[in-house]
Image 1 (cartoon, rainbow, N blue to C red):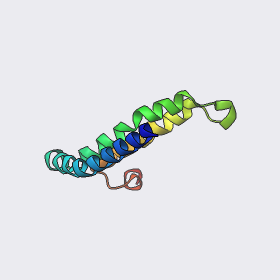
Image 2 (cartoon, helix red, strand yellow; image 1 turned 180 degrees about the vertical axis):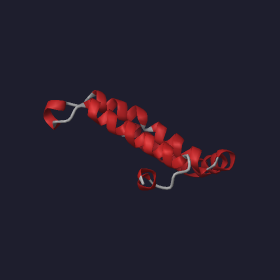
Image 3 (tube, rainbow, N blue to C red; image 1 turned 45 degrees about the vertical axis):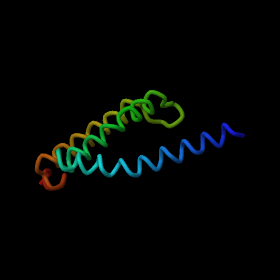
Image 4 (cartoon, rainbow, N blue to C red; image 1 turned 135 degrees about the vertical axis):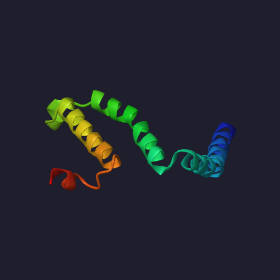
Amino acid sequence: MAELQSAVSLDSSACNVSRMIGPVVAGALIAAFGEGVCFAGNAASYSAVLVALLAGLDSSRFGVTATAIASGLVCGTAAVARALAGYTSVEEEAA
């Protein structure tokens, strides 16, 4: 029982420290690099999760291949890159 209390206390301490330190780090990163770079870094941080999900995809169960999903992700990423480069929307680019 003492180990459980220690684990809960450690988890609570880690959460409280991250609540204090997180906004400071975020503010410093935004001040140094801007919001766009911070959002891009956050988006890139999800790539490992996406790769793991694609690796474990059972195409026979869902009727979609990992290649099709990866192609959609590439197209979506390209659209975001174009939008960040100065286009306001994908519809304007097509017009």
